[in-house]
Length: 303
Image 1: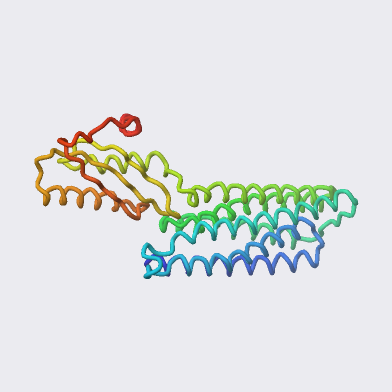
Image 2 (image 1 turned 45 degrees about the vertical axis):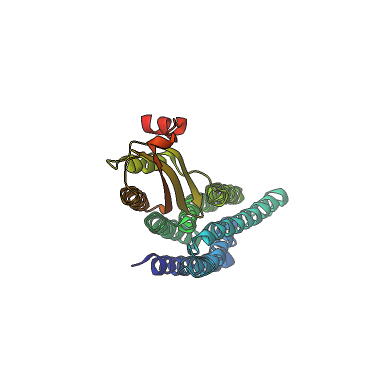
């Protein structure tokens, strides 16, 4: 399946699961009054809300290139991830406020019966499934929005487990564990928001990709038998994809056709990397004196 339909399918699965969990947790909260379950219901409701944004964002980002966007619409995706982060912060703040109010007022309701425990255990299992699914698809499709969603689901596993401990402890006679568990849920949610923002800022400010990828880009440039060196190697994010610019050094007696073939081969090799969108290769002949040392190239190639 191509990238566009695959990402849209994942978005619809995420939306469906989060809606189901929000409804189920809300029903259990209504019958038990558990603050930990209520906080989890708010979390799932927020997940369902931003799932709608993910579905819309993934539709926009997977549209084909057009006249006004000749390189496609992939650069929309980091903004979708940041919207996810805003929703995460809002949910975490709401839960933190409610738990704090409950602790300060002393108005703590103890959940009774197996319903709260069951729904939280089910939530942890469902979130684990979503985490593995979103992470696999996000990595395979190079989708920061899906990776951000995977991290939120990973965190939801931990927060659901914490809420489960709180509910069980409250039912055993320690009601203060319920709002304390809700506080832990809130902290976990807020941390996820910070993590999502940190990861996606690099896509928006044009940061360099990880060093192992830069080494692989350099290796591919130098792998051509007629390339004797490289300098001014620049790789940076443009949205979730990477643009590369590199000067390759060749002997100056090459014909124009030969130089063109060298350039085309190096471009094709670098663009074969799934993370790379465009590669721009400049051929430097030896006689022009443009061959020069490059400390960054020497560091990467020597590492």
